[in-house]
Length: 302
Length: 278
Image 1 (tube, chains in turn blue, brown):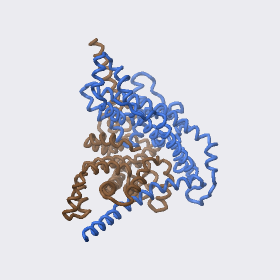
Image 2: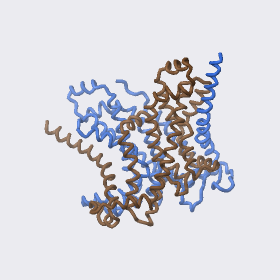
Image 3: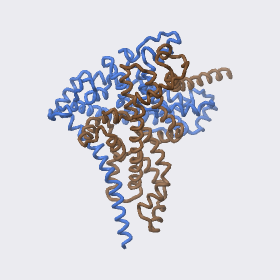
Image 4: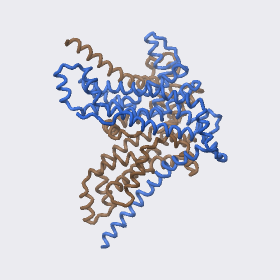
């Protein structure tokens, strides 16, 4: 059957043209760098000169580096604040949008999501203008309310890191509002109706019915937020460069600065940067596995 | 009783309004500051501009380099979008509607990338691109952003194509159509809704991408708009021409607003459907 043979030939050609280059590019640009970064983590290398194999030296340095712990501490502060605040705010907003019939709700649903499509650089610059010490929006509001308004939010050690928390919450909340709204819509109306007959208040309805039924979605939210907060360093990089005095130096930024930063007098330290990258890799994958175990996977049945 | 619910209802309404204000106020504030002179901006950050300084926008477009970087962005985003949509679509077709030997193996290898955080390969990806002579080149950026097949796109488009009935291809083959014809005349048009969704996502991602271009491009003449704005902001330490920077910021936001207004329902639906883009 020449037809069949022809069809098989067509298939082979199609697959070869379509799958082969894209898959090869995926292996080269995504998988191979992952392997390469393991190799780099055992090197002393400035990116230009000779590569020197130094065994576990970089890993030993990692454990004696006080700035690693400091950076991880900053990550921890962000994690324990940003995750609960984001989830609570978006749960409340989602509940209000779903269960209260205000005329403006449909507009809010669209507006709240908007920060998610804004570019990272735009968000960083907008918030730099909010926090600026002399002509910032926040100080302007505080002055108008008679509450001071002379503080340099990003320039002071005490407030620089804390100032990043509202930014993160502002960025992420809209996404979870939509996620939670979709999940809330999936809850059968009959559950609410029987509860309303029993004279339950809005508040009780939220805490006794809605919240437990959303535990599965909330778990996923915790994991996503955790990954985003640990990986994200661009806001600090753009807004504070990790300063003042390392007050906003988070772990990914610390790694990035070794490789591409201008803080080391233009010197690039690819080996150690890759070692820190390996640590972040292990940390992220490890945390994800632990969280998967820690939170009961069995979602509640209606 | 009635009174009480009335008051609490207004309180909750205020909560929703305040959150909306946190988004609208900074954006609106930046817009009207961008129409002031620097002196007026420094004098009072609340006062509305007495005279609208549209010349700030001209200055941002030329002396801040927004115009040049907008052209670079158009090239980088446009070309990447075209190539990556082509790659995603044909691969989704190959992986979901054609039977071949290594299919499930390659599929799982691609899905592996969903578990890789990516943050650890910034250095190695850069040295690889440098070794291939692809740094400081917009084509290099395009290649990196579009040719490697993406797990996220494959999952989304694949699940879309699986819903199309198998008989469509089979009857066309019996009528003597070639594989290429079936793909172009049948599968492609029917998959359009899915392709558009992916396209919008890709656009937002490419337009907003900062780290990739920042690492790979060092020649200011080749900066896309995001890196250009970063650089303009860093230079303000010496220039202190804030209103021009604000005008540049507004220009940068405009394409995002347009795309969002046009496609907001698709974007919101797609984001939560995919969800997993971590």
